[in-house]
Length: 311
Ligand SMILES: NC(=O)c1ccc[n+]([C@@H]2O[C@H](COP(=O)([O-])OP(=O)(O)OC[C@H]3O[C@@H](n4cnc5c(N)ncnc54)[C@H](O)[C@@H]3O)[C@@H](O)[C@H]2O)c1
Image 1: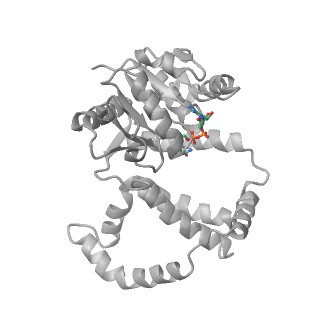
Image 2: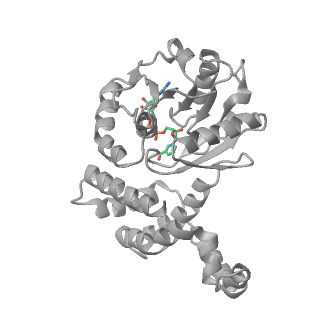
Image 3: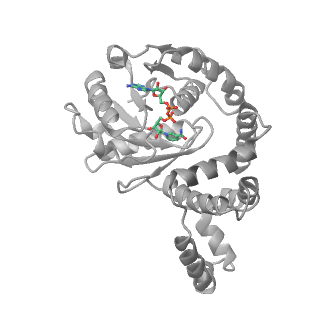
């Protein structure tokens, strides 16, 4: 079935960005969010990202205004949508209620994808009375209008055809879907991210490195290298490359890696309110004198350049 109209539920950070991407690809979007002021915020955000979207490949039918904001009343409007992207807050009980309503409000063959960062969809389909086999996770990275990755995570009874159709749809939007074969909290990319972040929190909160230098470490080493070859191929090249490179790296560096890992476990960041406060103050120091909106614009410009190089 061809997808012409997308339903977007929730227009915060992620839903607004998805909306921009759908519009840039010539789709019509029906947008729902109950918050006062959400319509104005969405419009402002879409205007702010449209110049960036215009620089990317997009449809000749792309139109910034091809959406209808319906407030909280998606139930009265989603009978017309061909795909749903849900972006409500990350609360399982709220998602359970919303998925029951989405399941009832849409045609039974319409795919309903959740942007959830880490809650498997089997945790919120229990009240879907019509067709839970068309529900899955379509987890983007922020901001979805720029970041290519979408983790497609079916639950155990999601139809295989639904997983394949969701992957095709995301590909048609220039995204790079990956199939996560088994449900687990945090899926794959966020689990990798939190492993690195937890060590970053430890290093900064223990005063071993400033927040600014920590970010500099990543933007000047792991960031560009992993953007080129990902961690495992980078590891392989560190072991001399070739078919034996990876095994050689593990044999060569393995003993040292294990010492570092033991030390990291012994000094893991502990999530006390005091530690969170101290860490937040260090990061606030890095932000001093910088304008958050300006940083976001610069991030977007750089992402466009990096991603165009990868193409
Ligand atoms: N922020 C991120 O970096 C990120 C990245 C990937 C995925 N996600 C996921 O995307 C989803 C949304 O996250 P976010 O960061 O955009 O949150 P957000 O708080 O910025 O936005 C949530 C939006 O949902 C709206 N909302 C509240 N109750 C609602 C309801 N009953 N029905 C519809 N909308 C409702 C709010 O008004 C708000 O606009 C979450 O599941 C989150 O895990 C977030």
